[in-house]
Length: 321
Image (cartoon, rainbow, N blue to C red; front, top):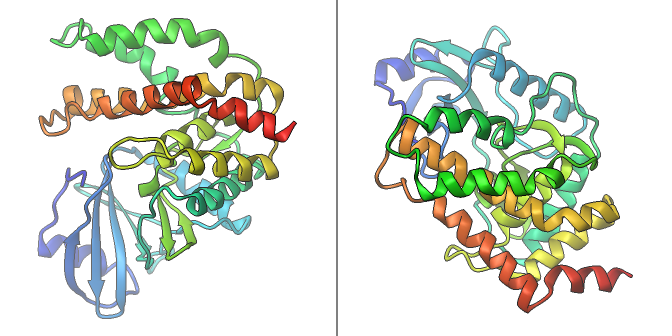
C-alpha cells in the first residue's frame, strides 16, 4: 500500500467520534494503491474504508467531492463518502484530510472478457455524463510532465534514460495529443485495482481522485493499459476486443479517435510510468518501487507487438465495417 501516514489508537478514536458509526474496534492496512494511506476500519456498527488523502490539497479535495456529488446525481456506480455528524464529507486532521467510505464487499477482478465488457459499458456511460466546471486537466499528462523536466534537471536523474526518452517521445506525440478530439469527463486512472466486482458482476468504479476534463481517448487508452493485461504484463487480446466493442456500442469512437488510439494507449502508459518514476525516485524515494515505471513500458511494447503481429486494432475496425 501507499503507506505515507500511520494512525495511533487515539487518532483513530478522534476520527471515529466525528461520525455516526459507533466506536472503533480494529484498524487494518489495505494493500495496493500508490497515492494514499488506506485502512479497513471496523467499528461497533460495521466496516468502513478510511482514506488519508496524502496527495491532495483542500482545493483538489473540494473538487473531488463536487465530482462525486455530480456522479451521485447521475446514479453512477461508485462509492460515496459517509458524512460526519455535522454533515461534512471529510475531516481535516493535523496529519491530513480524512474521508470515510462504506466498505463494499467484492474483489479486484481478473482481466477477463466479461470484466472488460462491463468496464467498457461503465466507461462509455461515464463519458456521456456532462462534466462539471472547474475540473483540472489530466493530472499525469503533459501539464505535469513539462514542469517535471525542470524539477529533475539538478538531480542525479537529469540524464536518466527514462527522462531523456520521455522528452523525445512527448515531442513526437504532441501533434496527436493536441489534436481536436472529443473531450469530456474522465476517470483518469482506470486500472483493475480501481474496480470492484462481486463474482462476475461489477459493483463499482472506485477512486475518482484523478477525475478531470480532457481528451476522452486518454481514458480509453488508460483502461486498455490498466485492465487488459495479466500480472505478468501479457496482453489479453480477447478482453481488449470486448472492452472496445462494449465501449464503442455506447459511445462510438470517431474516425480520428481510431487513428489516434495507438498514440493515446502509449501516452497512458507513459503517464503512469512518469508518475511512478517521479514519485518513487524523487518525491518519495522507495527502492522497492523505483523501477515499477518499467512495467508500463512493457505493456506499451506488448500493445505495439500485438498490432504488428496480430493486427488487434485493424481486425476490430474491419469487423465493424
